[in-house]
Image (cartoon, rainbow, N blue to C red; front, side):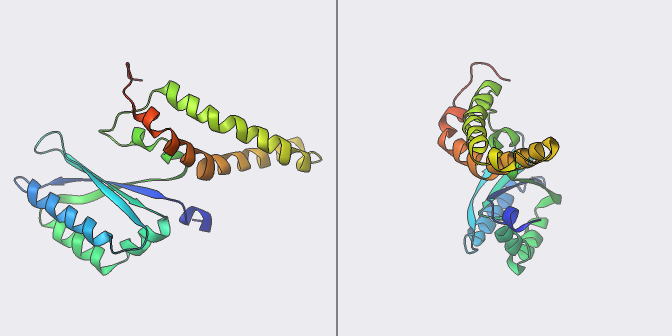
Length: 189
């Protein structure tokens, strides 16, 4: 992982089931672990999504300022102790999913239990980001690489485009347009 990706915000989604009749104890321990995480640099918050049924799977969303900050937590003795304590009231090992970069552009769509924005809304917000970014790159970068082989021009242009969209443009736009993206849709897509 390069240094740039280690400094971008990440979301870790954790899936885990509580043992029968241990749901309240399981939730209490997860809340305790979240309180402990507050003592670590870069912890931004946590959410608990309870299961739909008593034997269903819990989902936890832990937000960190960077992968580097999450790695410090993962390597800590406190994390190991909380995982051990949770093992007493949980079934099996936790399953993890990490959201960052392109996948996190519209992260609510990737989190079960959260309403997916319509494709029209996602396309519109993407266009709002892509159009000015393409114009900016056309004006600033295209003249500098105009003497390059066409394939190299396209490779450089698209690499810059993806980099800007993933780590600068889309995180800002999804925060700015969050109310629109999360507003109720008349139909699901």
